[in-house]
Amino acid sequence: MKDVTHAELAVLEALWDHAPQAVRELSERLYDTGGTAEQATVQKLLDRLRDKGFVARERDGRAYRFRPTLARDALIERRLQAVADQLCGGSLSPLITHLVRGRRLKPADVKELQGLLEDLDRRRRRKGR
Amino acid sequence: MKDVTHAELAVLEALWDHAPQAVRELSERLYDTGGTAEQATVQKLLDRLRDKGFVARERDGRAYRFRPTLARDALIERRLQAVADQLCGGSLSPLITHLVRGRRLKPADVKELQGLLEDLDRRRRRKGR
DNA sequence: CGCAAAGTAAGACGACGTGTCTGAATTTGC
DNA sequence: GCAAATTCAGACACGTCGTCTTACTTTGCG
Image (cartoon, rainbow over all chains, first blue to last red; front, side, top):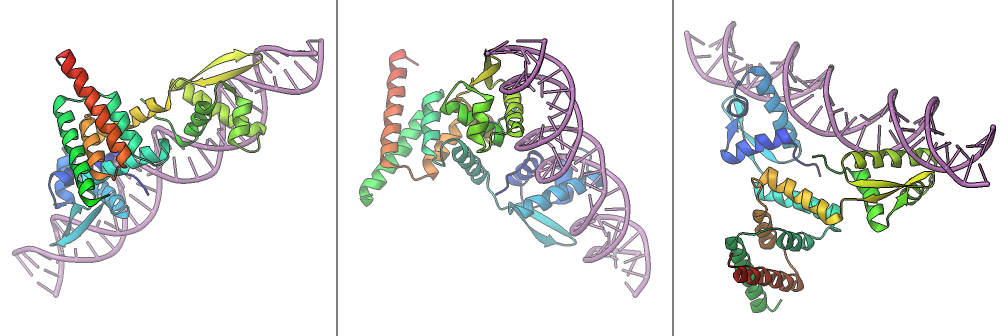
């Protein structure tokens, strides 16, 4: 399915930061000048995001208020899956090993990961999977 | 910097598979019909890849032979960094924890990761970092 | 009510990227 | 020296993206 573009991402970020918001508020936050043109731009971006199923809206007085239906985590997920699809035959595990191997991780990160893995391991052993 | 597009990636894949190759060979591999038009298409894609610094060429008789200067791993790296830049403030570690947490990993993958992390840990301890 | 203001919807636009192709210029093997 | 192979430069259609203008609809409120 379609992805989120740069300008659309800016709108999403604003919505992740605080939702729901109306077009007016968004255009004022995103562009310092919240004129009519900018509002229309934001409106169009919201339209496209809605077409893609990434935001929803609800009436509030005479205007709509928008909220994201796609969390930042879910978008990360999508992007990573896209990388995996194009470069790793769809499998995500090569990405992980690649990241762990190639990059300097802070000691805290290493600790956290080891914890996660141990949990995963334990849970599996318990379930017999 | 610029990224690699779909058609360009197909060319890169062919070069990763076997290098160096001439335009003729590539166009025959990528399109079943290796006519003049397709050769020119491949040529243009190679031009653009060369502009971006992802392939190099060397003369061989009257033609050039091309080889990739960007490995698959390096491209994966780029893509992951792009995701991190846009969605994680440039840091890669959130991606790792995200992947480990969210996805079913095969037991073998878990084992491999634990090994990697342990190595990393040991190396650090030894160096006093 | 009735109307001005606020908001929405629809479409056009220029700019850009992408994949493709045509035609001319250049090289080169024999 | 020439014909064939190869490269090069540019044009093309198509789609996407961000933006804006315009017309239509709703609605709060005097």
